[in-house]
Image 1 (spheres, rainbow, N blue to C red):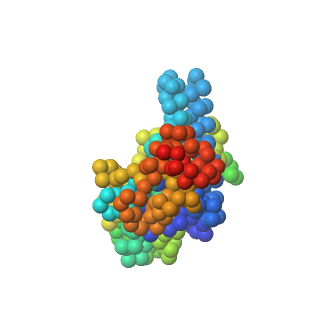
Image 2 (image 1 turned 90 degrees about the vertical axis):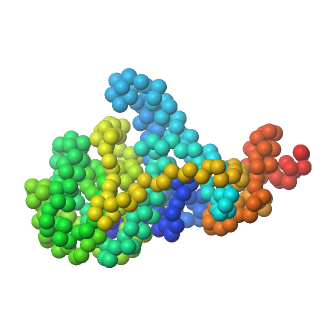
Image 3 (image 1 turned 180 degrees about the vertical axis):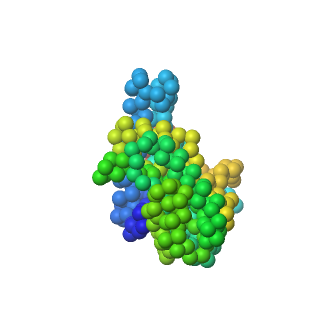
Length: 358
């Protein structure tokens, strides 16, 4: 299946709801896991491409995207640079569980925020498919065309809505979710938008599904269909472009501008039928009053092999285990911030010497 038969996935299968405040991986895990390291490199390339685009818009007096307010480009590029680089480990006062609380920019084309959103959707999608009897995944494509990308996306969405209204489709399908993916063909250079659709229902004969899709699209017959056998990998595969519908690092500045305008203001995923109401957006955390800061992320990561408290905080977050009250690095953070010892701590100075200075 196009996009769903790949043996590699964007994220490891989720076994628990991910925190939207956390990064996609820790430094230690990224080094020891080749798949995570590969994803981290890809994420960095996509983030760099987004920063380059916003900086280009800021420096281009003819840019239409910012409507003359080029200072907006500066603000957005700076937000992208700083996104999720600062933050702290927060301990829930009631449960004792620890999570990373990071400052995020929440911009659509930010690969870091997108990774957190996709991680959440991957978990939700796999949990939803687990409740279905025999989940399946279909990929709906359109015939290649040189028409404008935004028009193709509108047509694709309209055709899929019409397909869901057909009596024959409703006979086989009870509900599902849809996630878009936008590519540019390496053969003819034409845009190729398509939909990945995990759905709940009985066995849908491929010939009938292809014929139904051909009728609503007036000519497009190619539909990929497969039964889901590995919930985690399939969920990862179908949702991985739902936050950022395409890989900007593989596009020119002109193509990035085309994609941005084509996707601006559009709903880029959805659910219907038995999947309607599935929370494709993560819930907002309203528990700041019961979250205590137990240490800056940078200090914990750098000192986890030297300081027992730092190690306990790090392992509690990675393993999602209980962290006892009173275990924190706030004293450590204060000393580093006050006396400028952070760089020396990074370089490996004995942290016990810092505490003795107070």
